[in-house]
Length: 336
Length: 277
Image (cartoon, each protein chain N blue to C red):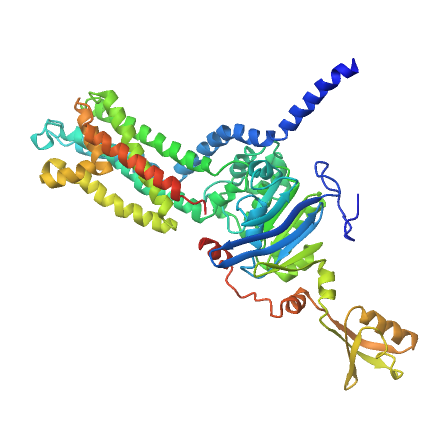
């Protein structure tokens, strides 16, 4: 197993995947609908075995990018290779090997769980046994339940089972936790980890920062059709350069200049008995080490965690607007 | 020997390279099976909606039974161009089946499937979402045949209605009528942006179609102008052709031209405008 671009591959890819090669290669993708630019020169690779996040506010072009990769939409220009195939020309062959969980797609209201799985199993060359999937996704008891009588979480599990039915090497999960309550979201995250652990490469589309931070090995941030960053979640948070703050209450006297001299520290202020240190990069480790060497004990140490939200603000210069209606991107596409 | 074998193994390699396209071929080979499985599922779902079989299979037959029980209704009537009342009711039963399936059930079902993303989900599989369209057409086509056979059987066995005297012409009339009405249903599903709109457009066409076809009032009571209008509506042509062939004549060329014309125009426009999402 090769280590690619400093990104360790933690789980073996299925034997059919070309080892050490990109599962997806996207180069200079452009797509516009009328005057609206959906994708503007987007390029990225997805490596075998990773969970790759496509993050961005609604209307950023995520769904368009995914639909191009699935062969459901044609780009205006640019090249795409998925599992070595051109999605535009080899759509059916590709969809044989790619599992898809779609945003806002449902099944017939009265179709039963078992019926749906058996029906879809007939679409694939070598489907997984329906009983096995029912057990694996905790749906065995719901086998004869109509789709519309399932809870949101159960519907989600059925869609995950449908996505995995054809033994895919790659899956696209588009907004998988939309409309789920926090507990069901946590459960869905565990399910995504299970898929990843089985060796399947996952492309996770989300507009939820915490979800991407939790699940993804690497994240591409899209904003208004442009790729603004591509890195590990930690890398994005660190390299976005926004400052971080640590607070603590020293027990004893801090030698003058001790903290100020730590690399990355930009400011030291006092507020009553508290010391507030602002800095960038790995300054917090340096500060605690320096205090340790000076034998100054600290109490109430708190590091204000930065998140991808902060990274997004730093990268785009505006807050991540989560209040936009979720249907925006679809409406944009309806304009086409 | 090994030199002699090498071109052969190259040829094998080439054909193996050709097989790299096999998954696509395989998914095409699977299409008939997928269509059959989808039709089976859609048929089950049809019978899970209690209203649909009632409207299509039970209502027309109940009309024949209800009117057939009226004394003297089975006698030829001069108000119906010599057709008996029961035979006329059986004929409008066929028209009701065509209108309900083509203008209500088909567009509403397809509109709902598009709105709910059922078609969208199918696009993400190796098979084409066309199989769901195909399954729906097979289902409504099958329902037309079943309901028509039921009408003829109940009418002839219980109420003295003759089996259509020009059976070939009758089959032709029903098939062309179904083609016209179902194509129109596809067109409604294609142009309607939502399931609600599909239902509304379907209903807007349904009631005038039923009236103009002579379902509510026999066309014999129409003014000559209204009769001409009736002749060129798809349901009007279908009902007239069904009644004529039931009595033994062939469908009139105008009836055939009207049904074929509506079927072709509606199907072509529907095929061009239909969207999966």
